[in-house]
Image 1 (cartoon, rainbow, N blue to C red):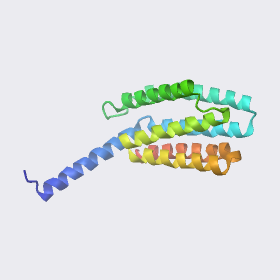
Image 2: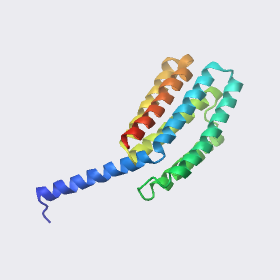
Image 3: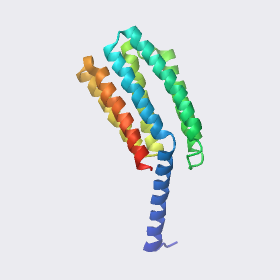
Image 4: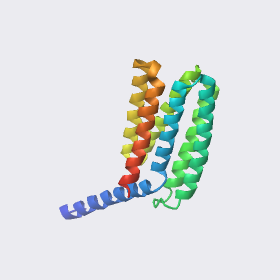
Length: 188
């Protein structure tokens, strides 16, 4: 079977158009709104962890995560009809539910992390693993966000441990929030 240059070019253009349509559809869905929401939660949570007493910071995190889960459910409910790529919305939701289950299981069974101050970094690293997987699966931009925030986590926690939470608030939460805003604006 021989394909002419024109046929090959048309096929490549069709593939590129499908990729563009998928990205636009995802940008119009809840993904970027989730990123902005969780970027704000990271910002407030890590800022609280830097400035507040540990017990109060823990309560702040619990409240922020509870609000984040409720708002994530509402966002998913409201944007589920906007995603025009069949099957992606439910698969994305199931992926993050599986992520929550397995991350919780690792923490419960293996007591990882062993110190309370490491918990935020562990969950952040696991979340960035989720972003990398989503990026490999859906859109490479998400993988790059995951890699960038992972580098921030590693550098901050090893080079400036006393400022890790402040760095995570500004650079970690900021990267998530601004990346969500970028995706949202690029899909409009």
